[in-house]
Amino acid sequence: MQFLEDAPVIIIGAGLAGLTTAWRLRQDGREVIVLEAADRIGGRAVQSARVWDDGQYAELGGELIDSAYHAVRALCAELDVELLEPNIYGERHDGDESLMEGYLRVAGFVLGDRVLSRTECDEIGVELRSAAQAHRPHPGEIVEQWIRRARLSEPAAGVTRALARLLTQLDPWDCDTHFVFGAQDGTFQRIRGGTQGLFLALADGVDVRLNDPVVRVERDRLVRVTTTSGQKLVGSAVVCAVGPYAISTIGFDPPLSDERVMTATSLLPAMGGKVMAQYVEGDLVREAFGSLVCTDGVINAAWVTAPSAAGTPEIVTSFFAGTERGLLADPEAAYARLDALVADVVGSPVTRVHGEVKNWWAEPLHLGVTVAPAEGTRAEVAGILGGEELVTHFAGDYTDAPMSGTLEGAVRSGLRAANEVLRKSDAVHTDHVTERLSI
Ligand SMILES: Cc1cc2nc3c(=O)[nH]c(=O)nc-3n(C[C@H](O)[C@H](O)[C@H](O)COP(=O)(O)OP(=O)(O)OC[C@H]3O[C@@H](n4cnc5c(N)ncnc54)[C@H](O)[C@@H]3O)c2cc1C
Image (cartoon, rainbow, N blue to C red; front, side, top):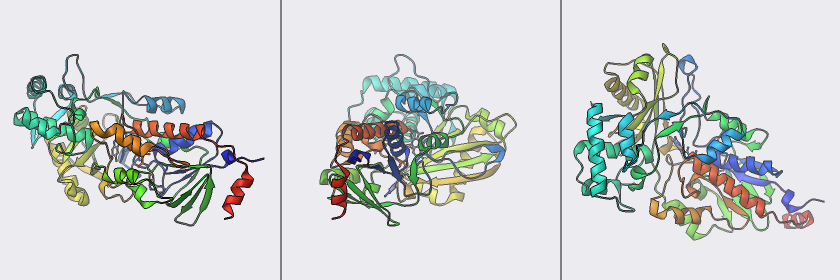
């Protein structure tokens, strides 16, 4: 005898959220089918497919795992996915008022084309601490507003803008101060061998169907999902794990609540992308870049990608965001900017051998890097977008209030959606299902 709970759970989207849901449900013995629009798994976390010299690799999307990513770390441990040694981008001390002071202790800063000395960084750290004490950031206050209210000097304002962009990929007039006053300690790890290792482990043995976007979801006591190629699947529940804007490309019957649609489409995306280039002068680049270099220009941050042996070239990865992000549409111009920054930091011209640009802002299924609502609205937004309705569950980084817009948020949301499904498995006889299907 078969019951409705034996019908597969259909998961839309093979990003980190969708694959985490699939993995968790399979652990519980549930059958799952994952439908993915793209020709690959991973969504916004993906390795570059190009061949770089010396077997080096680069990440086109999410890669950094910070010390507060408990769900990602637990998942990696369970799947035997190893993390590399930590990279220290910021060193927090007791009494710090903001995470900016920590970054100023270890990261490099370039304002305009001027590389700040360590002494200048220390002085800016002192200024930012006393500015924060004298002008406590107000909840919801925008970073640029705080910069002006606190009357920061130009260098301190430049550092604040650079870090706000690095942490959000938003302009400082689009993000609130909690991002730069948050508790992050600036210690990050990456997956050994690249993020693909995690995705392959999660998808091992899962029925993932690529290259076939879902176009329609009919739902009642069961779900009927139709894809672009005409596949029609029947399931006991559906987990929609696509980005917030991709929701608008799926016809839900009955339609989604107005509140959900309006909230999803009103989110402000961080628009930008990554530019990577491999340089012959690897030793010089590794030494000069140290941990991380932040700038107040279109390149908000640049870093060496993975530890590579002496005598080998080095890949520098950079984030392009802000009003000049249009450069991402012109790879040669984007490379020229990155070359100029690397030359400034190294102190001499450098030789680029390979490059790659990933413009997430121009990706139709994503329309940006990520969305992270302002602190004061997060719980409400996540409550609306993550709430289940009619055998339909929602996962995705933006449905997790504390860790919105991160790999951690994606994993947490995937686990939550799986747990919702497991609690809700109705025991309905398949005769009922068949009867309904024949309508
Ligand atoms: C450049 C960049 C750098 C980043 N850096 C970091 C970082 O260092 N650390 C960090 O924590 N986070 C980072 N992030 C964010 C992180 O990558 C994301 O939070 C995370 O990958 C989101 O996973 P997700 O599963 O929620 O969504 P996604 O990865 O967007 O997955 C959604 C999936 O749904 C698919 N889809 C869409 N529509 C349909 C449809 N109709 N039918 C079927 N499938 C569909 C998409 O193709 C996609 O595969 C970065 C993101 C970018 C872009």
